[in-house]
Amino acid sequence: MGVGYLAVGEGDSIAWTVLYDEVLIVVSGTFRLRRRATVFEAIPGDVLWVPRGTTLAYEGLDAKVAYVLYPVDWRARHSAAASPA
Image 1 (tube, rainbow, N blue to C red):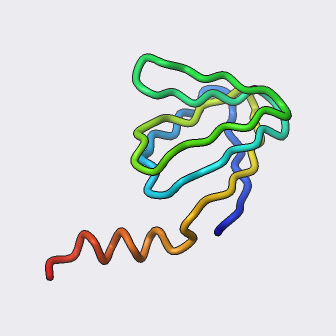
Image 2: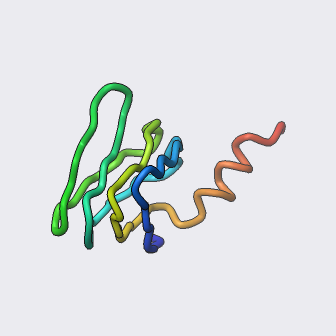
């Protein structure tokens, strides 16, 4: 399990496909998680769960977000899966 902290400023949009299960906890500001045409807007105290394989964009208005992800070695697992046998 890994934990971290993300700051998303006004006008930022971080496109990503998550390769792990993730829980996001909004600490401050307004956080937006965009998935296709759907936008989930969250404020301090809100918790979002994002399942592995979700394509999304993290957006916000000066948002600070704590995250927890599993598995912590997702990068190594993904690299190993992408390598030819």
